[in-house]
Length: 417
Image (cartoon, rainbow, N blue to C red):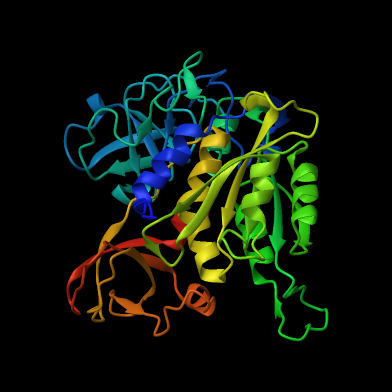
């Protein structure tokens, strides 16, 4: 029997994203509870930002009509700290003004204090040593936001700077998408949790902590169903439990077709499943499907299903396939823009002369010379390569290169947010 051709990374991602739909439910939360959430509806500014023309510098507010030549001398008629409002600026006078203070009526420029000098022996006279231009160092009313205009649009991922924009617009609460709810479990009788004695032939389960942390780093609620024994009944029972009140189930391990790999028959029995071979390295098998919610009928629609993605068990394969495929799927569930982050051309300071027929993702680190170093062991079982590195080189199928050539670099910090 001829094996179906392997999917490219882009084909697999396109198929995943064509199925994902944003969660529809939302909730209104206080500003500080909105960090890392996705805005469900656009919001308008309640005020002009800034509310008045104000100065961006410490200095002197002047009328440019009084300062046609360098060295013009003006009487200091008033002092305006931030939080105060000055009086009309009369001809031939200046106002001592401090950053953030409203520019007084009549003034049309601010001269920063470094360009001014106090007249010797006369504390109320200032010499303006430049010729200012109208509008300099003045932040105009509403130049950032105008009352009634959109401050943030629906679908915006709320970072600290977006919360600052919302606060400047006078808002105290935001309507955000509810958090995506993800269940995770891990298969393999060989697995033990750290702190437990290792079984004969056993290993500690590193994928649990890695994947749960990845899920939480994306602002999702994560439910850990732990290590599931290598049996069909146990796997099916866990799938039924995980399908309740979750948008997505993620597993690692058991997606091959060996006698002890029960993910495929279990998901098929509880829902539907495609088992893909993807032309990437590390990572090759990926399972995608859906599990019927426990109270749904066999003819249930997508609303009564929970999405399922099964990752390979090798720790680097599991980590990389999460970043490349699961992360974009989650982003789309959240209502965010989804896809693999942009790569950047960077210089490889190593040779790569063994091009593979698969798309390889190499663990690399930026060195002091601004190039990329390669972790010497690129095995899918060596998780320290990901801890040591700060990103991946996206190496297309069959590509080789020598030190000094440019390669496509994707930083981990872009893949974990």
